[in-house]
Image (tube, rainbow, N blue to C red; front, side, top):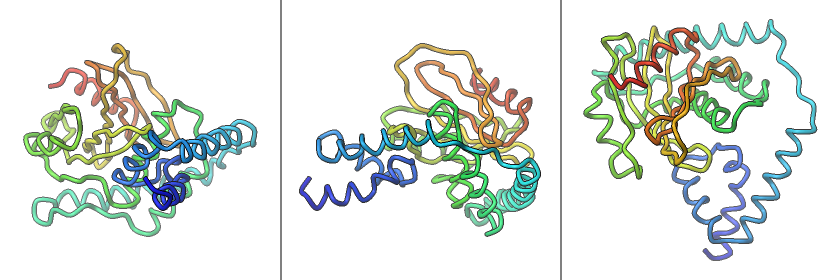
Length: 253
C-alpha cells in the first residue's frame, strides 16, 4: 500500500483496536498490518498503551440502583421491539430496531462496567451489545437452517454448524458475519422467550474443552471448544435456560 493507504489505515487503528469497525474495513486493516511494518509499529504502540491504561487506571463499579434501572429499560424496550419484529419477519423481512432510549441505556451500560474476562468473551459481549444497538442482528434473516447455513458459503473459510431448535423453544432467527480477535467468525442468532441469543463460531486448532460460564456486563456467557470449533454463546437469558440451549448445541440436534 502507498502512503495514502497507510494514513487511512492509521486513521482507523483506534476503531480496529477496540473492535468497532465493520467486517470489511477490519479485514482490510488486518491484511495491511501483515505487510506494513510502519503501521504495525503504530498499532503495537497503541495496543501496549491501552493494556497499560487498563492495568493501572482504577475502575469503579456501576451503582446497583443505576444498573437495575438500565437493565429494566433495556429489557422493556428490547423485548417488546424484538418480539414485534420477529412476528412480522415473514411479511417485511426487516431487522428489529431499538428506540433511542434503549440505545442510550445499552451504550451507558457498555462503557460503565469494564471487563476483566478472557478477550474472546469480552469482544463477543461487545459485539452482542453492538448488534442490538445498531439494529444489525442478522445479515440473513430466516428460521430455516437450510437457508442460513448455505448463506455463509464463500464468505468464510469454514462451514459453521447451524441448527433449528424451534421444537425445543429456541428458534433460529438468522446469521451474520462478524469479527472477533482479528478473525472472521460466524454469528448465528436464536431466540427464547423474547431473549436474543448470539452464538459466535470460529475454527480453532486446539483440542476440545468443557463449557465454562461467565458473566460480562450483565450478560451471561458460555464458551467451549468442540470439533475444532470455538463457541461463545452470549445472552441476557438466565443461566439455566442458556445452559439448556448450549447442551442442545453441543449435541447438534
